[in-house]
Amino acid sequence: MTRSFHPTFATVDLAALSHNLFQIRKCLAPGCVIMPVIKANAYGHGAIETARALIRQGVSHLAVFSIEEAIALRQAEIAGALVVLGPFFPQQVEDLMAYRLTPVVSDRSVLEVLTHATRSRPAPYPIHLKIETGMNRLGLTQRDLETLINKHRFPSSLLLEGLMSHLADSDGIGQDTTETQIGRFNKALKVARDGGHAVPLVHLSNSAAIIRFPSAHYTMVRPGIMLYGYHTLPSTVPVPDLQPILSLKTCIAQLRLIQPDDRVSYNGTFIARRSTRIAILPIGYADGLSRRLSNRGVVLVRGQRVPIVGLVCMDMVMVDVTTVPDAMVGDEVVVIGQQGREKITATDIAEWTGTIPYEVLCAISPRVPRRYHSS
Image 1: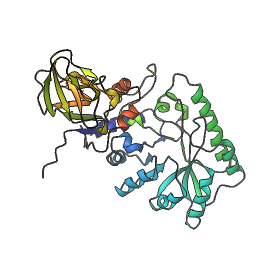
Image 2: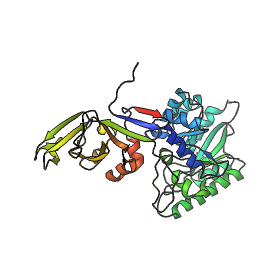
Image 3: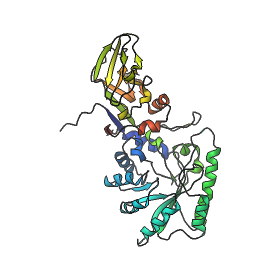
Image 4: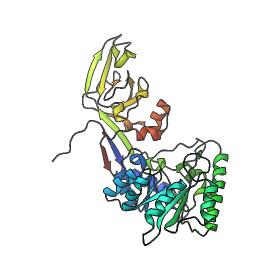
């Protein structure tokens, strides 16, 4: 049976993923464990296939945001340790334990629910604690931790397997904010260990901190965007040899010739100044092509950059292929990736739309099929 034809699709290069993982490993001291972050459908790349590829490369721990994301991986028979970074609720504790998930606890009230649920288990249930060090999002305060540890209120039915925090400015120009957070985290770690907890998994570094702050590597790091071939580091910081692992492609569905003063797409925001050859592409903002690319972005046709004209529609977009006279219906169009000598990256699109590559990649819709290969 032949594979269904999809005019718009994303390809994910698992060999490039392995390459990026190797580049990250080279930055670490022996014994430091990598816990890849595959939340948000692995930043748009497909969490299940990404997880399988990473486990084949020896990864033992994977981080997701929600219990729902973790359950989807378990149902796909992903057997490694799954650490749930985000908040969870009392109604989810039964699922959390049934699927053998490791929660990150950032609120003392949740500990009571976990304690009650784990009382009858034969061995302590592993958890990680998240400490607030400067992000002012999720996390226990230093005082919370001291009360929990020093006043012997840490439940005996739970095992403090990990301690973590999250850096707010590790990719910023300066380093003071991050150094302050590292200092606060070190104090929290001392409290935990002085209180008799070994805490084997200590993790603070995201992608940027892996490169810029070796003192924050501890026993585990949490790379996200670098695994997928991107970074947001200042231009003055040397970065590893990263390879973007995703390409986004579509094809020409129709061609039409319009005349001077003809308008294109909703509200007629593009007005032709000359006889113009327009290609209609079956990709739009419902697929993840930002509407902010209207009259601004470019795509690749036959190895040439051609501009988006008019407003990006929900399911379609128009481009000006006047400078590509040989363009035909069915021709491949590259939205992200390389064609000939030209290349468009998620970073390029982020710059055109005033955002970051994370958002560009995460925005690629589930209705866009992902195809996986190892180049």
